[in-house]
Length: 350
Image (cartoon, rainbow, N blue to C red; front, top):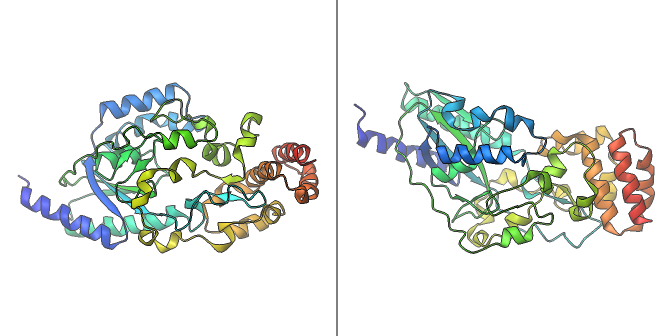
């Protein structure tokens, strides 16, 4: 029989260790399937809200529950790391000659930063309980980090579908450790959005058909990062000067007043050249220049062509005729999607 006191003590020490490693919050949830969570995933996929992210559908059976991915798992250690920005993410909205990059992508690649710390915490747990098996996950595996974070008490899934923490607002990177060890469970967090609809009202493309439901096909983060072809013309103007991701629904959340930039890991401090980059400089990037500029950045994974496509939409929205010469040169780009975006931008600027 497992000693309850020993289990509680181990969980308490685990939490202390996680905080010492730089995580802002940590909790423990069941690894078994939650029928309501699985039903919501099925409905969301059934509506086609995942767009062209086929991997979400093909691995639905793994996403339904942690045990669907690893049957031996008993508990999920959910962890959050703050990336609260020091400055207003909306500050560049009126500066058409500048590009807006989502806060999370202005520093080092969070996948690398978090995974290293998760592995250190997992090694600590195995050293404390050698019989325990562990697996660590950061975003790239079929893991439902947000609902698991809610079940583990880190916060709740807000109306914008992201996790909201009462201590860190909407600015948390999430990771998870699955384990066979029977750790003490945390209390799930209750929803505290109330009647607030600030995030829904702030969305430039009306990507929320209802509260707590995101249609990725209309989301600027999806359109600028995951979507590979030309962006539909109905959304191009709404992109504004956002070239990688969108922070609007996160930035307006009232709970952010409790977040502190001092709590953010230093690795997430924005690189000077990415905090307010000039569109003219980004439009000039060839493949080699793109790879050099975004080495160690999550932006690198979308490639030069998709990135320049986004910059051209921003140029078309800038109202800056000084960009017209560069835009016209890209009308002959080898990538047809880039050429299409350049033609659209040139027509707008001319």
